[in-house]
Image (cartoon, rainbow, N blue to C red; front, side):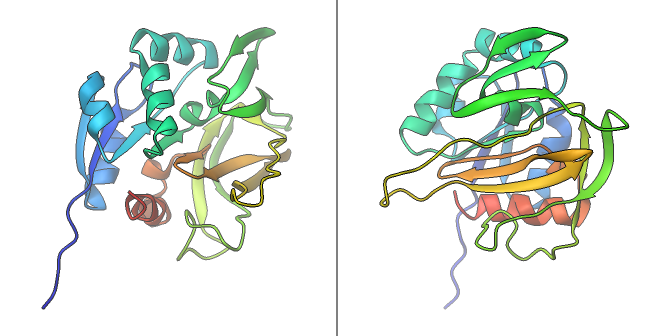
Length: 216
């Protein structure tokens, strides 16, 4: 007798700074029940919360706080409830961002600074491969030469979070290179994030989103 897994409910958090329709379509493609909203209760009750982000770090943080998104993300993570950030939605998870000399406090889920990408050509726009850990869940089922779509001029160039408790699994950090190495994705318990846009990355992005849905 076959059994069907229940459809997972995912909220794409609508705080005014992300391509929410593209994210909605990509998640629906991989079988999620998707809703775009900034409603507190719906965002808290969903199986997964996806936080997109497009534009400046400081503007995204203002929009997120105005929508109480910072509080929602913190409450979900404190209860082990899955959250995924995309592009600037990943960057704001770090301690701070610096753009045009302006420093803005992030959500401080991870230590470190998001700053200008040092490369001959910026923004970094187009397809790139990544270097994922062998035990990555996010990139399971994907070949090493899989390409993902990036659009950004800023990135986290360092990873400094250390886990000293052997009972806690260290975050799995994926890297990419454009001029210099930068953090392309992080898997940290209930918190996943990508600098690239899985919703614009074709079949490879769909596989990554499928892998995330399977953890919910």
